[in-house]
Length: 355
Ligand SMILES: Nc1ncnc2c1ncn2[C@@H]1O[C@H](COP(=O)(O)OP(=O)(O)OP(=O)(O)O)[C@@H](O)[C@H]1O
Image (cartoon, rainbow, N blue to C red; front, side, top):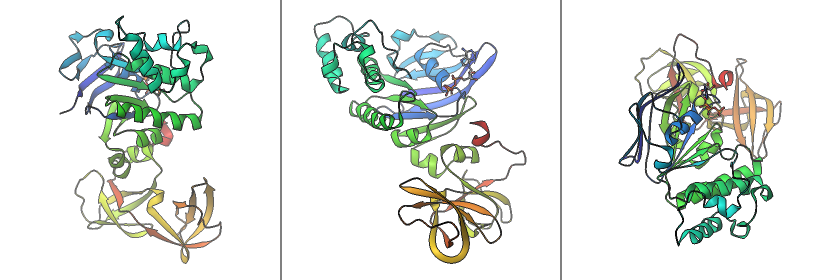
């Protein structure tokens, strides 16, 4: 049974619907990421859960508590929901310790709890400092500790690492995820960074234009995206036209093992769109399958451009250090079943066009 249940939630700004019947369930103790392009409604979703925006339709429940419905709007401070904003938003006139304890009632155990939280986020030594004397990463840790102080039922994180430099971002996000899991918090993180969502979260919900398109484990969402749009939004794709042929597809790479990504049945000869991830292609030296046209080096691996004898271009991700060179002749294998999508007549814009 899910701890957080958002059911048919609609939210509008004036007459414009921004969230359209959103359904999302969050198991207790898990970290769920909502991943979507800019403007799709991620922050609006968090604001509705936090009680800063009313529900035009549907409900938000946490545990036994009904937080929002068209007739119920529990006050933000009575929701048991913590918030970590993008820019930390610490109170500049309060110390680190006072910021952490901001939401805690006066009680005998209060200063002990503040000290524990400061130590937990690695800032035990800085408890008397002013926010202006902190780095961006330290300020974010204070914001996290502040949100956890009242032991919330749900922690909301609004792109909390977006403003940090890449190195700090990857260290801090791992630390924060470990901390949240270690404390068995239930957390909802919004991000437009697919690597962040896939590497941190237990579950990923992919959002577009105010709707959740797919929900699943990072593995499910990446390896079996429900649509071409989701496939291209969560990672690199190699797409080809093809024809279904009894569990295989005939395409530019020959007859390839495949499955319908949406679980639908397809009839032999039906046109399909074939999708592979570049790392599902295997490239070995020699042979006549393809010519290497480009090598885009990224240290740990490279994205290798290949031209097939027909002139068709595909890309493969090849692990370093055994990289081919431009002009090499190579053999191309496939080490993962391709995904096939029914061909729809209207052309669907890809994330590259909408991001
Ligand atoms: N106060 C507001 N009044 C009217 N429209 C708004 C308001 N806030 C946001 N919107 C619109 O609602 C839509 C969703 O915005 P939201 O901030 O939720 O998106 P987001 O996915 O969080 O985007 P980003 O990743 O850029 O922060 C956008 O089209 C935005 O222009």
